[in-house]
Image (cartoon, rainbow, N blue to C red; front, side, top):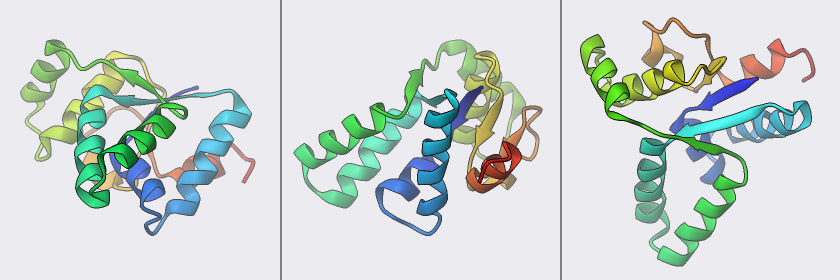
Length: 138
């Protein structure tokens, strides 16, 4: 199974925010099942910026990012994804770019804590806990 992990799921885990337990369980299940987790290239820059801003330490930011890259692979965001997202005119353009990147790369599901941001998605969109329950092995 090919899963696109939204930025917020990673941030919950990194900063141990509400829901971080579900995010950690998600990545354990992905590993245990032999599934593949992806983030978009645009998520990489967003994550780096947010993490650096929060931790205020460049070396620590790089260390955190290296750990993230142990969990996920990165999908390219091309002009096609940008143009496709622009045509859809979603309220949240960043989420639409994520969505189009996932759709154009044939992901099976998008994992996010903000399902409402993907209300118009044709792909399955699930929270970490919903995905864990769906695979039937909590």
